[in-house]
Structures are given as C-alpha cells and as structure tokens.
Image (cartoon, rainbow, N blue to C red; front, side, top):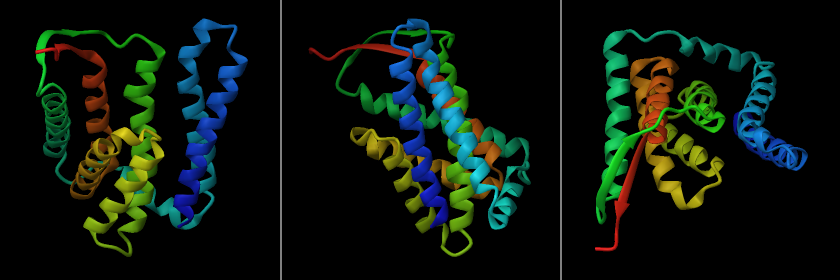
Length: 206
C-alpha cells in the first residue's frame, strides 16, 4: 500500500513540476522541450530515494540483475515490443488507407524523454518495485492486473486507458518470466522508439 502512495506522489510531483516549469519558461521557447525530461527525472529521483529508505523495498532491487536465460529473454523482449507495435498500428489504421510511411530520427528532447527516461523510470517503479512487492502476497494474474490498472490511471490519458493497460500487462508478464526488469525496460524502450521513429500518414476519407 505504501508503494501505491509513493506512485501517486510521483505522478502529482511530476505534474506540479511540469506546471511550474511551464510558467517559468514561457519566455523561453527552446526550454519547453526539456520540461518533460526535468520534471520526470526529478520526480523519479525524489520518489525513488524515499522508497529506498524502506529496508523491505531495497530487497526488491535484486530483480535488476540479468535473468536466467540471457539472450533468449532479450530476443523475446524485443520481439514482444515489435508485436505490440504492429498490433497498435494495425488497430489504428484498420479503417484508413496508408499514404506514406517514413522514419524520423529522434533528435528532440521530448523524444529522448519518451524513448529512454520514461520507460526506465516506469519499469523500475511499476515492475521492479510495485509488481515484485505484490507478487509476495498475490498471484501473477491479480498482481499484473492491479499494477496495469494503476499504470494506466497514472498516465492521465483516460482515452488511452485500455491501450496502456494491455501494454503494462504484457510487460508485467515479461518481467515475471524473465526474472529481470532489464528485459521489460528494453522492450518498453524499443516499443517507444518505434512509436516515435516510424511515422504513418493515412487517409480515412474513403
């Protein structure tokens, strides 16, 4: 229960810092791209330090090591990320005609935040800590469901609730069966990279 309170604090602190930075940087257009990086990083560091003050949560960090299957778990993690992305794109464009598909290099600060920082922070908090803690007293299905529900709510994009829930549920199972948060981090990073790098233009007028 304490971890859930910390996660709520993480979301609220992130929002508060973002709003504050936006008001401060209104006169600096170039600074806007770094708001997400700063607010997310600061919030994560503060909450992570507070969590690590509890001895029972320090033990959960052992999951940060490599799993027992090594390269096979890594291949599975990357394959899962690709499959989730293909499913997402298939669902989004099922009633539209694809006009153009092109790749763009993630060079903006927002892309760096979405591709690298967010997946690492989220996997450590939701999988490495919350899921691992819940697995001590609940089965995998219930734990993955509860964590995914909290994960989806915390994104504050309720129109995408089901989408976030499904992704989190899959990452939770990957974390459990691989035995390491590193694989869910790699899978999450690759998935976000694909979302940012592959641009699909569609025509849904037909």
